Image 1 (cartoon, rainbow, N blue to C red):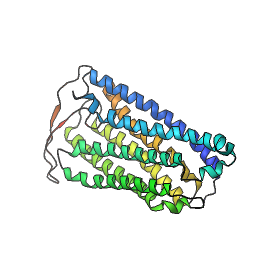
Image 2: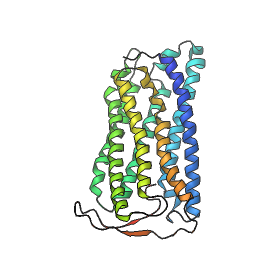
Image 3: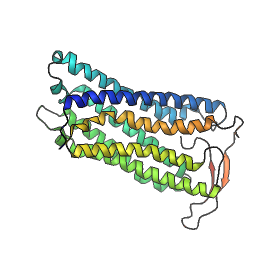
Image 4: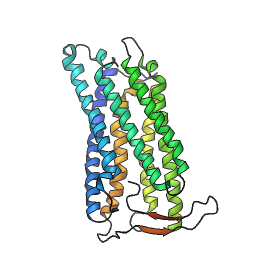
Length: 303
Protein backbone atom coordinates (compact mmCIF):
# COMPACT_ATOMS: atom_id res chain seq x y z
CA UNK A 1 0.00 0.00 0.00
CA UNK A 2 1.43 3.36 -1.04
CA UNK A 3 1.09 5.91 1.76
CA UNK A 4 0.50 9.38 0.35
CA UNK A 5 -1.22 12.05 2.51
CA UNK A 6 -4.68 12.99 1.25
CA UNK A 7 -4.42 16.78 1.56
CA UNK A 8 -1.10 17.12 -0.33
CA UNK A 9 -2.59 14.87 -3.01
CA UNK A 10 -5.64 17.13 -3.28
CA UNK A 11 -3.47 20.24 -3.59
CA UNK A 12 -1.21 18.58 -6.16
CA UNK A 13 -4.30 17.52 -8.13
CA UNK A 14 -5.47 21.13 -8.34
CA UNK A 15 -2.12 22.30 -9.68
CA UNK A 16 -1.79 19.45 -12.20
CA UNK A 17 -5.38 19.72 -13.40
CA UNK A 18 -5.04 23.47 -13.88
CA UNK A 19 -1.86 22.91 -15.89
CA UNK A 20 -3.49 20.36 -18.20
CA UNK A 21 -6.68 22.41 -18.42
CA UNK A 22 -4.61 25.31 -19.72
CA UNK A 23 -3.11 23.03 -22.36
CA UNK A 24 -6.53 21.70 -23.27
CA UNK A 25 -8.02 25.21 -23.55
CA UNK A 26 -5.28 26.31 -25.97
CA UNK A 27 -5.74 23.15 -28.05
CA UNK A 28 -9.53 23.54 -28.10
CA UNK A 29 -9.40 27.16 -29.28
CA UNK A 30 -6.73 26.27 -31.84
CA UNK A 31 -8.82 23.40 -33.20
CA UNK A 32 -11.83 25.69 -33.62
CA UNK A 33 -9.69 28.26 -35.43
CA UNK A 34 -8.23 25.61 -37.75
CA UNK A 35 -11.70 24.24 -38.40
CA UNK A 36 -13.04 27.63 -39.42
CA UNK A 37 -10.05 28.51 -41.61
CA UNK A 38 -10.06 25.07 -43.25
CA UNK A 39 -13.72 25.57 -44.15
CA UNK A 40 -13.14 29.00 -45.69
CA UNK A 41 -10.07 27.86 -47.63
CA UNK A 42 -11.88 24.89 -49.15
CA UNK A 43 -9.67 22.35 -47.37
CA UNK A 44 -12.66 20.71 -45.74
CA UNK A 45 -15.73 19.12 -47.36
CA UNK A 46 -18.53 21.65 -47.93
CA UNK A 47 -20.92 20.48 -45.24
CA UNK A 48 -22.72 22.31 -42.49
CA UNK A 49 -20.15 23.56 -40.01
CA UNK A 50 -22.51 23.11 -37.07
CA UNK A 51 -22.68 19.37 -37.78
CA UNK A 52 -18.93 18.98 -37.38
CA UNK A 53 -18.04 16.53 -34.59
CA UNK A 54 -15.22 18.88 -33.61
CA UNK A 55 -17.70 21.67 -32.94
CA UNK A 56 -20.56 19.61 -31.51
CA UNK A 57 -18.58 17.08 -29.50
CA UNK A 58 -15.82 19.56 -28.75
CA UNK A 59 -18.25 22.12 -27.34
CA UNK A 60 -19.94 19.56 -25.08
CA UNK A 61 -16.53 18.32 -24.00
CA UNK A 62 -15.45 21.88 -23.25
CA UNK A 63 -18.48 22.35 -20.97
CA UNK A 64 -17.76 19.09 -19.11
CA UNK A 65 -14.02 19.71 -18.68
CA UNK A 66 -14.50 23.35 -17.69
CA UNK A 67 -17.27 22.41 -15.26
CA UNK A 68 -15.01 19.83 -13.64
CA UNK A 69 -12.13 22.29 -13.30
CA UNK A 70 -14.39 25.01 -11.85
CA UNK A 71 -15.67 22.54 -9.25
CA UNK A 72 -12.08 21.58 -8.39
CA UNK A 73 -11.31 25.21 -7.56
CA UNK A 74 -14.65 25.62 -5.78
CA UNK A 75 -14.00 22.58 -3.60
CA UNK A 76 -10.59 23.98 -2.67
CA UNK A 77 -12.23 27.09 -1.20
CA UNK A 78 -15.00 25.04 0.41
CA UNK A 79 -12.48 22.76 2.13
CA UNK A 80 -10.01 25.37 3.35
CA UNK A 81 -12.10 28.52 3.76
CA UNK A 82 -15.89 28.14 3.76
CA UNK A 83 -16.99 24.87 5.42
CA UNK A 84 -16.47 25.27 9.18
CA UNK A 85 -13.99 28.03 8.35
CA UNK A 86 -11.65 25.44 6.92
CA UNK A 87 -11.34 23.57 10.20
CA UNK A 88 -11.53 20.07 8.70
CA UNK A 89 -10.46 19.94 5.03
CA UNK A 90 -9.62 16.25 5.37
CA UNK A 91 -13.16 15.49 6.48
CA UNK A 92 -14.57 17.55 3.62
CA UNK A 93 -12.53 15.73 0.97
CA UNK A 94 -13.42 12.43 2.57
CA UNK A 95 -17.17 13.02 2.28
CA UNK A 96 -18.14 11.67 -1.14
CA UNK A 97 -21.80 12.52 -0.65
CA UNK A 98 -21.02 16.22 -1.07
CA UNK A 99 -23.05 17.71 -3.92
CA UNK A 100 -19.91 19.22 -5.44
CA UNK A 101 -18.19 15.82 -5.31
CA UNK A 102 -21.09 14.09 -7.07
CA UNK A 103 -21.31 16.81 -9.74
CA UNK A 104 -17.55 16.70 -10.26
CA UNK A 105 -17.65 12.94 -10.68
CA UNK A 106 -20.49 13.25 -13.20
CA UNK A 107 -18.53 15.83 -15.20
CA UNK A 108 -15.52 13.50 -15.14
CA UNK A 109 -17.45 10.50 -16.40
CA UNK A 110 -19.39 12.56 -18.97
CA UNK A 111 -16.11 13.88 -20.38
CA UNK A 112 -14.83 10.30 -20.68
CA UNK A 113 -18.04 9.30 -22.45
CA UNK A 114 -17.83 12.18 -24.93
CA UNK A 115 -14.19 11.40 -25.73
CA UNK A 116 -15.08 7.75 -26.31
CA UNK A 117 -17.99 8.78 -28.55
CA UNK A 118 -15.60 10.88 -30.65
CA UNK A 119 -13.23 7.90 -30.88
CA UNK A 120 -16.09 5.66 -32.03
CA UNK A 121 -17.12 8.32 -34.56
CA UNK A 122 -13.66 8.12 -36.13
CA UNK A 123 -14.08 4.35 -36.40
CA UNK A 124 -17.45 4.90 -38.09
CA UNK A 125 -15.93 7.40 -40.53
CA UNK A 126 -13.37 4.83 -41.67
CA UNK A 127 -15.47 1.65 -41.61
CA UNK A 128 -19.10 2.66 -42.27
CA UNK A 129 -18.74 2.11 -46.04
CA UNK A 130 -16.94 -1.21 -45.57
CA UNK A 131 -18.24 -3.24 -42.65
CA UNK A 132 -20.69 -1.82 -40.15
CA UNK A 133 -20.51 -4.87 -37.91
CA UNK A 134 -17.26 -3.53 -36.46
CA UNK A 135 -19.40 -0.95 -34.65
CA UNK A 136 -21.16 -3.55 -32.46
CA UNK A 137 -18.40 -3.91 -29.85
CA UNK A 138 -17.67 -0.17 -29.31
CA UNK A 139 -21.41 0.52 -29.13
CA UNK A 140 -21.70 -2.01 -26.32
CA UNK A 141 -18.71 -0.55 -24.48
CA UNK A 142 -20.23 2.94 -24.76
CA UNK A 143 -23.48 1.65 -23.27
CA UNK A 144 -21.48 -0.05 -20.53
CA UNK A 145 -19.64 3.20 -19.80
CA UNK A 146 -22.94 5.08 -19.57
CA UNK A 147 -24.36 2.47 -17.17
CA UNK A 148 -21.20 2.61 -15.04
CA UNK A 149 -21.44 6.40 -14.89
CA UNK A 150 -24.96 6.14 -13.47
CA UNK A 151 -23.82 3.46 -11.01
CA UNK A 152 -20.92 5.54 -9.67
CA UNK A 153 -23.09 8.66 -9.26
CA UNK A 154 -25.80 6.66 -7.46
CA UNK A 155 -23.36 4.99 -5.07
CA UNK A 156 -21.62 8.27 -4.24
CA UNK A 157 -24.98 9.85 -3.42
CA UNK A 158 -25.57 7.07 -0.85
CA UNK A 159 -22.21 7.61 0.85
CA UNK A 160 -22.23 8.10 4.63
CA UNK A 161 -19.33 9.02 6.95
CA UNK A 162 -17.35 5.91 7.75
CA UNK A 163 -17.96 4.23 4.38
CA UNK A 164 -14.96 3.24 2.31
CA UNK A 165 -15.02 4.69 -1.19
CA UNK A 166 -12.84 1.75 -2.25
CA UNK A 167 -15.72 -0.56 -1.45
CA UNK A 168 -18.65 1.77 -2.16
CA UNK A 169 -18.33 2.00 -5.96
CA UNK A 170 -15.46 -0.40 -6.51
CA UNK A 171 -17.04 -2.43 -9.31
CA UNK A 172 -18.47 0.58 -11.16
CA UNK A 173 -15.20 2.52 -11.07
CA UNK A 174 -13.17 -0.40 -12.39
CA UNK A 175 -15.83 -0.97 -15.07
CA UNK A 176 -15.56 2.67 -16.17
CA UNK A 177 -11.82 2.35 -16.70
CA UNK A 178 -12.17 -1.03 -18.41
CA UNK A 179 -14.80 0.17 -20.89
CA UNK A 180 -12.71 3.24 -21.76
CA UNK A 181 -9.56 1.18 -22.30
CA UNK A 182 -11.41 -1.42 -24.41
CA UNK A 183 -13.02 1.29 -26.56
CA UNK A 184 -9.76 3.12 -27.20
CA UNK A 185 -7.70 0.03 -27.96
CA UNK A 186 -10.34 -1.55 -30.21
CA UNK A 187 -11.14 1.59 -32.21
CA UNK A 188 -7.53 2.70 -32.54
CA UNK A 189 -6.41 -0.75 -33.69
CA UNK A 190 -9.11 -1.01 -36.38
CA UNK A 191 -8.67 2.58 -37.58
CA UNK A 192 -4.91 2.16 -37.75
CA UNK A 193 -5.12 -1.18 -39.53
CA UNK A 194 -7.59 0.07 -42.13
CA UNK A 195 -5.70 3.29 -42.89
CA UNK A 196 -2.43 1.37 -43.08
CA UNK A 197 -3.94 -1.00 -45.65
CA UNK A 198 -5.28 1.89 -47.72
CA UNK A 199 -1.98 3.78 -47.45
CA UNK A 200 -0.06 0.78 -48.72
CA UNK A 201 -2.38 0.59 -51.72
CA UNK A 202 -2.24 4.31 -52.46
CA UNK A 203 1.42 4.84 -51.54
CA UNK A 204 0.81 8.56 -50.98
CA UNK A 205 -2.03 11.05 -50.86
CA UNK A 206 0.01 14.23 -50.81
CA UNK A 207 0.49 16.43 -47.73
CA UNK A 208 -0.25 14.41 -44.64
CA UNK A 209 0.03 10.72 -45.43
CA UNK A 210 -2.47 8.34 -43.90
CA UNK A 211 0.39 6.78 -41.96
CA UNK A 212 0.99 10.17 -40.33
CA UNK A 213 -2.64 10.31 -39.28
CA UNK A 214 -2.41 6.77 -37.90
CA UNK A 215 0.58 7.81 -35.79
CA UNK A 216 -1.29 10.84 -34.46
CA UNK A 217 -4.34 8.76 -33.48
CA UNK A 218 -2.26 6.00 -31.88
CA UNK A 219 -0.16 8.45 -29.85
CA UNK A 220 -3.23 10.26 -28.52
CA UNK A 221 -5.05 7.02 -27.70
CA UNK A 222 -1.93 5.71 -25.94
CA UNK A 223 -1.91 8.75 -23.63
CA UNK A 224 -5.53 8.17 -22.59
CA UNK A 225 -4.98 4.43 -22.15
CA UNK A 226 -1.80 4.83 -20.09
CA UNK A 227 -3.57 7.31 -17.81
CA UNK A 228 -6.46 4.87 -17.26
CA UNK A 229 -4.03 2.06 -16.46
CA UNK A 230 -2.19 4.34 -14.02
CA UNK A 231 -5.44 5.03 -12.19
CA UNK A 232 -6.37 1.34 -12.00
CA UNK A 233 -2.91 0.53 -10.63
CA UNK A 234 -3.06 3.20 -7.91
CA UNK A 235 -6.67 2.25 -7.12
CA UNK A 236 -5.72 -1.41 -6.72
CA UNK A 237 -2.78 -0.39 -4.51
CA UNK A 238 -5.22 1.69 -2.37
CA UNK A 239 -2.92 4.68 -2.74
CA UNK A 240 -4.17 8.24 -2.37
CA UNK A 241 -2.58 8.83 -5.76
CA UNK A 242 -5.86 7.44 -7.09
CA UNK A 243 -7.38 10.83 -6.36
CA UNK A 244 -5.35 12.17 -9.26
CA UNK A 245 -8.25 10.79 -11.26
CA UNK A 246 -9.60 14.35 -11.09
CA UNK A 247 -6.93 15.24 -13.65
CA UNK A 248 -8.49 12.75 -16.09
CA UNK A 249 -10.92 15.08 -17.94
CA UNK A 250 -8.17 17.57 -18.80
CA UNK A 251 -5.69 14.84 -19.79
CA UNK A 252 -7.94 12.75 -22.05
CA UNK A 253 -9.55 15.85 -23.57
CA UNK A 254 -6.15 17.36 -24.36
CA UNK A 255 -5.12 14.06 -25.95
CA UNK A 256 -8.28 14.11 -28.05
CA UNK A 257 -7.75 17.73 -29.15
CA UNK A 258 -4.17 16.90 -30.15
CA UNK A 259 -5.61 14.81 -32.98
CA UNK A 260 -7.71 17.67 -34.32
CA UNK A 261 -4.96 20.25 -33.98
CA UNK A 262 -2.24 18.15 -35.58
CA UNK A 263 -4.47 17.08 -38.48
CA UNK A 264 -5.73 20.66 -38.71
CA UNK A 265 -2.17 21.92 -38.99
CA UNK A 266 -1.85 19.56 -41.94
CA UNK A 267 -4.78 21.39 -43.53
CA UNK A 268 -3.19 24.73 -42.71
CA UNK A 269 -0.02 23.77 -44.58
CA UNK A 270 -1.91 22.35 -47.55
CA UNK A 271 -2.05 24.38 -50.80
CA UNK A 272 -4.70 27.10 -50.84
CA UNK A 273 -6.09 25.84 -54.12
CA UNK A 274 -6.87 22.40 -52.87
CA UNK A 275 -9.42 20.38 -54.79
CA UNK A 276 -12.90 21.05 -53.46
CA UNK A 277 -14.26 17.72 -54.70
CA UNK A 278 -13.66 14.45 -52.87
CA UNK A 279 -10.56 12.57 -53.96
CA UNK A 280 -11.58 9.16 -55.29
CA UNK A 281 -9.10 6.38 -54.80
CA UNK A 282 -9.47 3.09 -56.62
CA UNK A 283 -8.20 0.70 -54.01
CA UNK A 284 -7.43 -2.76 -55.42
CA UNK A 285 -9.21 -5.70 -53.86
CA UNK A 286 -7.38 -7.68 -51.23
CA UNK A 287 -7.81 -11.40 -51.48
CA UNK A 288 -7.31 -11.94 -47.77
CA UNK A 289 -10.37 -10.17 -46.44
CA UNK A 290 -12.28 -8.64 -49.30
CA UNK A 291 -12.06 -5.17 -47.77
CA UNK A 292 -10.58 -3.55 -50.85
CA UNK A 293 -13.18 -1.42 -52.61
CA UNK A 294 -13.64 1.90 -54.31
CA UNK A 295 -13.93 4.39 -51.49
CA UNK A 296 -14.19 8.15 -51.41
CA UNK A 297 -11.86 9.60 -48.83
CA UNK A 298 -12.48 13.20 -47.94
CA UNK A 299 -10.40 15.63 -45.96
CA UNK A 300 -11.91 15.75 -42.50
CA UNK A 301 -13.34 12.23 -42.52
CA UNK A 302 -11.61 11.43 -39.25
CA UNK A 303 -12.50 14.68 -37.54
